[in-house]
Amino acid sequence: MTTFSPVETLVPHKPPMRLVDEILSVDNAVCRVKSVIHRNHLFLRADSTLAPEAFCEIMAQSFAAGEAQRRKFAGLSTEGGGYLVSVRNFRVFSYARAGEELTTEVTQQDDFMGTRIVSGAVFRGNDKLAEGTVYIFMWEGNIPPEMK
Image (cartoon, rainbow, N blue to C red; front, side, top):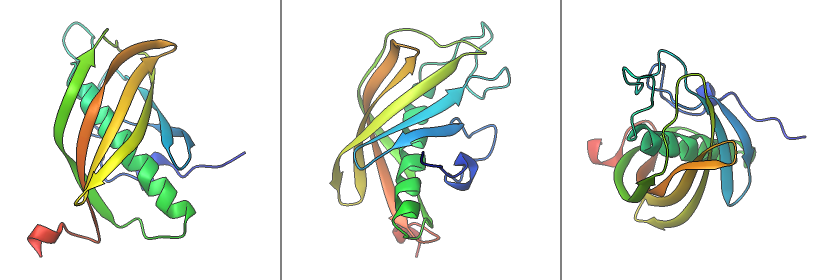
């Protein structure tokens, strides 16, 4: 059985912005990540449903955690970062609620000049809640190249 690093060591986000809790699986193509919708969740609305835009950020953070874990397994540096730059073809089928556990599956489709094109979906059990494509600009090192 593969042991994964704690997600807080893989992504730079701190609570309440960190929306992913645990890597479930990661290979060369697909990463699966668990997220728990806590009562103090950053994107939780007054009616205890998760704001739909949270799914985009959960997908982006899931990819970031998986990518950092892949790099760690390969003995490469995990210094660097990324940020969500665009969302395409995003569809929300159902809402998530406080107390629920979600599973996100993400797959990198392409890399265009440092921007990763990632397709993904968020599930509650077998129910698909959302799907789409996120574009994530990634860099290695301590600061983005445009800030050097």
